[in-house]
Length: 144
Image (cartoon, rainbow, N blue to C red; front, side, top):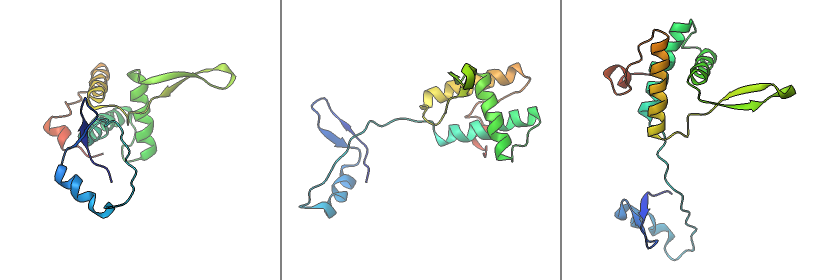
């Protein structure tokens, strides 16, 4: 079980839904339990993810002549976009060769993912593509 809440300055936990939290403890009455705390991360939203794949990656696939319905093509184009906007790390490969390794986007928070999307829009504009805002009607209806 996981329950969201807030720990105040005195270290006291305040559940977001106290009734549900209390109800969840009933099966554990008179039992020893282990409680784990971890900081909540605000990762990219499903809406942002759908807009990235369904709008950005799809537009670049079409522009570059790749098939959006092909998973390998879609992944290749996504990596090319992320390389194009500088979302990578430089590593040493075999023989000391420099390799640009695309960074994952799955752990980005909503703010960072918004910035990444805007960089994709800029890259699109530089390549003659109009990438709509993720909150536009087109993006909200996007399917990956």
